[in-house]
Image 1: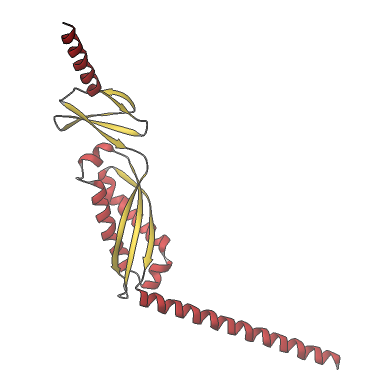
Image 2: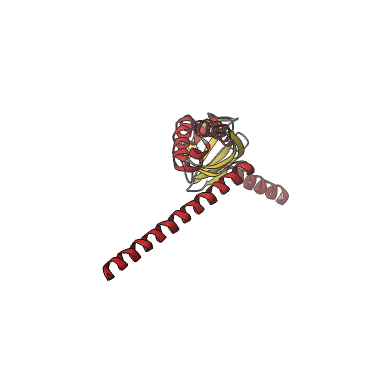
Length: 206
């Protein structure tokens, strides 16, 4: 008799453990019955029917999607390597779980495609000096495209735009030459000013 009571208590505890779920304040719980969505649970304790229902937890906090480096061709046919990060918040846990097979994969591919399009419309110089413009364009494009997936793109940040090493070396040489040119102009201007002051001093002393 005692064994049966002990066994019954164990079964009850197992069923209770499978029935009671905790949803954190920053989460939403999607209750599925036999694999089909039934309802959304907010934060706190929620109950499900064991073995028939299951719960899928969705984090509603801002999250980061890392866009892997990829080669992009600029308008002036220079291949640059670009990577970025995307910040997003889920606004509708039902849409993000059921309107797209894998949100992270879909968003990454969408970002890579639009990175190629946006930077492909720019020259190398424009792409290197217009990160804020690129970030803003990508954010607007991705936010519009992912709205049907129940998420909001809060910001996009280009991490790196790297030209080939030969182009980088040429740019460094050009920058060095420009600095030297400006230094020579500054020196010449200084010498001219000094000569003028000396001439004016000689004129006043006569």
